[in-house]
Length: 148
Length: 195
Image (tube, rainbow over all chains, first blue to last red; front, side, top):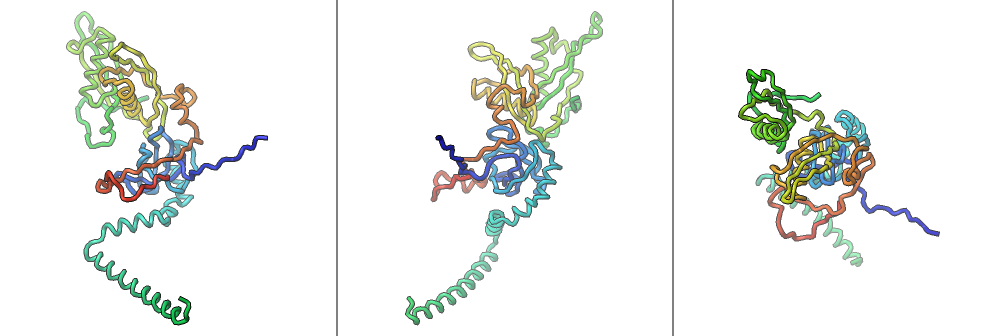
């Protein structure tokens, strides 16, 4: 008897029709778009009506695939793509994802001026003081009780 | 029906996105000058892929001279128009017949490409010919370019990209940073190429 084990592909994200990808470079960097069709090995046709990305051919190397996926037929019109993306609430899921939040935080940090960095330093220091105080009181209690 | 935009006024918007593609498709109509012995000479029309109208007109005369007994110095161009791609939003298959003059001889070729526009497919063709056959643009003549349905494609490298269920992962994703300051030859930590 030959057992055919169903082999699981280790990949979870694929370049496929309906996959939502984030654009890495260019004027639309940071925006999401859905893959409408695969042109060839290096390029896909993308469309991002909810994020203002025009329908265009885009190099796969400049895309970052997200875990989000939408269902529509290949070469679907922008109208159809927009309808599917809005019904699946893709823009909201993306904006509330950790990835997008981290990106927003990073760009915020990059855009700080000197005064903001001063305020950040003071805020961090104040927070760390509270944490350290709580930690040290806890430590002292445990030491007194002989636990450490 | 093809959408044409007459260029006899010789104004081209160089800021527009479509004019940044290395090729444009032009429709050129020309004929021999009318003479008393031949008051209505035959009018010839060609669709030429060229970066601008100057090159397009030049190529028109080059081809017409080879195919018919009409020369530029005894002829006139009646109209030159830009042919715009009707649907730039769908990926299409194109079959291109070309005539290629190599160092060894003259060959005809049939190649298939996938692109969004005809001009894009022609650009792919020229790049492909340059890489595989060291062909310069001046040695390539596009005989015919036809949009093909998925069933009519012959080449397996194009057929593999067909179908609504096409999917593939990005197994070894090497990131090229958008900002130049992050593009260093050495990295402190080994990069993660997973997805």
